[in-house]
Structure formats: structure tokens, C-alpha cells
Amino acid sequence: MEPLRVGIAGLGTVGGGVLALLGEHGERLASIAGRRIEVVAVSARRRRKKRAAPIGQFEWHTDPLALARHPGVDVVLELIGGAEGVARKLCETALKNGKAVVTANKALLALHGTELARAAERAGKPLRFEAAVAGGIPIVKALREGLVGNRIEGVYGILNGTCNYILTEMRASRRDFAAVLAEAQAKGFAEADPSFDVDGIDAAHKLTILASLAFGCPVNFSAVHVEGIRQVSAIDIAHADEFNCRIKLLAIARMTERGLEQRVHPCLVPVNTAIAHVDGVINAVVAEGDYAGSTVFEGRGAGAGPTASAVAADLVDIAAGRHVYPFGVPTAKLKALRAAPMREHVSRYYIRLMVYDRPGVIAEVSAVLRDQRISIESLVQRGRAEAADRAVAVVLISHEVDEAAMRRAMERIGRLKSVVEPPCVIRIEQL
Ligand SMILES: NC(=O)c1ccc[n+]([C@@H]2O[C@H](COP(=O)([O-])OP(=O)(O)OC[C@H]3O[C@@H](n4cnc5c(N)ncnc54)[C@H](OP(=O)(O)O)[C@@H]3O)[C@@H](O)[C@H]2O)c1
Image 1: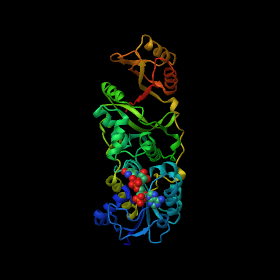
Image 2: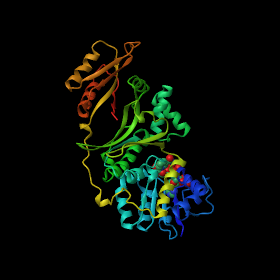
Image 3: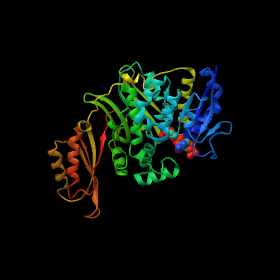
């Protein structure tokens, strides 16, 4: 059979990994796919830059769109990144020109995934994105195909390795967020501009894709409630330990009576759950199916090797002619779902207040909570402030209460004169 001819746009971490993998495992993949997967052309910004594997034997194009118009290319790998601009244009042009597309670009898919899937259907060509969510974990294929017999009730997990690394290190070294972030940046585990990761946006992009696959709905990034981990301090992590919990940034999509919940935020998770023990840069996803029950996937969510592994799986499927709809069903069958309003979300809460150590402070806080009908399961204050102008941490655990009442209470408590900084509120997740 004719080889599958590939054009790779983007030769950075992911693109370099793909080149290395295809070089090493090309023969084996050819025997599995029934034909060779052959890179014919590549594109990046700088031609002379050192790459993870030699590129001298491939056609070079400084303009990645040349790959989308190239008559000798069957599949375009979009491994550049960014929700707009050249990456989007490349995918659209490639599909329009009758080429299959494989991308690792979660930002693009979270914002334009449904339109791209529609363009792929019109072209009758595959659009694949296994590398876009949780790196080497084959969760896209698992939700789209492996668990297809189930009605999925929930899918959640740790989808951002940078945040998980920071939270793990904060616990291990008892240091605060800023110090650990600086170290993670120095080691290359966090970007120079870490906001996409630490503010929860990257995890939300991935959740949007998982939710579409799991619940058969169009991607809807604007429906995701997003919070990051900047507010989590070493004190919170130490207190979580005392409550037999760990703090994790979770991305959660769950069907509820109120509609589809999609949320990304730090959570206290009980230590007796699998997810509590997923540490460092590792990712994990749990899919809850009505027949399979709870299935846990764990592995490396980023880096050259894991992402190349995911891209290779997509290429083999395309080479073998195994075609599926990008989100499992035709786009016309994707059903928009009501978004469950976050203010109606019910949870137990961990609340940390930094307060001046003066008589009457607890009574003031309790009065606000009483007015909002929030009842408290426990309250902990250890030690005394060293001076009247120094604050102490008071930690409360609430019983179940809706988000709207909690927000009102926190807004009022934050205005009390004896409370020195905005309250830190973390939901306690019953998994
Ligand atoms: N890194 C990961 O672990 C990981 C994991 C999952 C998904 N992803 C996704 O995979 C994609 C690529 O990520 P990455 O980490 O591999 O990025 P990267 O290391 O920064 O590489 C990006 C590549 O794109 C090229 N490029 C940038 N702008 C271009 C343009 N206008 N025209 C042509 N080429 C251009 C760069 O060229 P030069 O090399 O010449 O500068 C570089 O080779 C992103 O969508 C990312 O979200 C990454």
C-alpha cells in the first residue's frame, strides 16, 4: 500500500518527540497500520535550530500553510499551539484541502473544536487529538470508543502536571506557592508565564474536550467555572493533612439534575481516594460509567515522549483507515446541554481566615455564617499571635451549603475589620 504521507508543523517538544518516535518505531507501526507512515515535509519558525531528530531529509517550509496545500501530504500534524492565528488557519486549510489533521492543541479545540469537527466531516477526513488531553494517557480514545457502551455520569481528574507538581512540592517542603513556582520555572516544569497553568485555564481547556466526548455535547469552554491554585498556601496544605485530605487541582464534569457541571478548582480530596495519591507531574482521569463503574487512568500528561505516543496512536488509526467522528458522534448529533449554575453547586467547604487574635472575632464570623444558614462542622485555631498586629489562621469546615450562600458569607467576612486578608475557600470534594 502507499505510505501515509505526513507534514509536521511545529518541531518543538511535541513535534520533536513525534520525529524521534517515528524514527525509532516506524517499522513496527507500519506492520500494525498495514502501511508506512512517512514524514515528507516539516515546518517551524527557525530552520537552523537543533531538533530532537535530524530533519535534513524532509522538505522544509517556513510557512506552515504550505503543508496544508501540499499535494504530497495526506495528514497535517498541527503541533504549533495557540487557539487562534496560524494553528487555527492551518487546521482549517488542511481540512478544506482534503487532508486529515492531527493536533495536540487543547486551546484550539476547547474554543473551536465543534467547528473543526464539522469541517472534518464536510471533508470526509479524520480530525484527531489524543495528545491534547492528558498526554500519554489514551483518555480520548477510551471515552470515545473503549467506554462507548456506558452512559458516562462523570469524568474528572488531574489534568495539569504543573499545578500538581507545585501542590506536591508545597506539601513535601512546606513552602509557599511563590517559592515552589519559582523553583518549578527554574527546572523547566513551569512556563515563564505560568498563568495558563496555575490559573486553571489549561485544565479547563482539556476538561471542555473530555466533557464533549463524555456527554456528547458541543465544546463549551465559557461554561467552565475556573479557579487556579494561587490562593493555596502551605498552611492550607498542612491543615488538609490534618483532615486526612490532600489538596489537588481537579477538573470535574458531571451530569447533575441541574444540568452539566464543568468546573476546575482546588479541592480537598480524601486520602482514601486514588486521586489523592497522584503526585508530581503525573495526570489522572477517572471516568464513571453506568456499566463499567469507575475507571482510573494515570500517567504522564506532558512532555515529548507521552505526547508523541498519543500522536502515533492517532496516525496509526488514520493509516489503518479506522475512522471515527472526532467527538464520537456526527456534529449534528452533539446536543447542547444546560450548564448547571455554579452558584447552585452544593459542597462542604474548607475556609481559612487570617484574623487578628482579639476577643470577639469568632463571634463576628459566626454571626455572618449564621445569617447565611451555614453550619460549621469544626473550627480550629492553633496557638496565639505573637503580637496584637499579627494575624493567626482560623480554619473552619462547613457542612453542605450552596455556593451562593458561601460567597455571600465570604464577601461579608472579608469586610470584617479583624479579618486581614480575603478568606481562602476550598471545596471539599466527595469522590
Ligand atoms: N509540551 C507538551 O508537553 C504538550 C502536551 C500536550 C499538548 N501540547 C500542545 O502541543 C502544541 C505544541 O506544544 P509544544 O510544547 O511542542 O510547543 P513548543 O515546544 O513551543 O513548539 C512549538 C513549535 O511551533 C513552531 N512555531 C511556532 N510558531 C510558528 C509559526 N508561526 N509558524 C511555524 N512554526 C511555528 C516553533 O518553531 P521554532 O522551533 O522554530 O521556534 C516550534 O517548533 C501546543 O498546542 C501545546 O498546547 C504540548
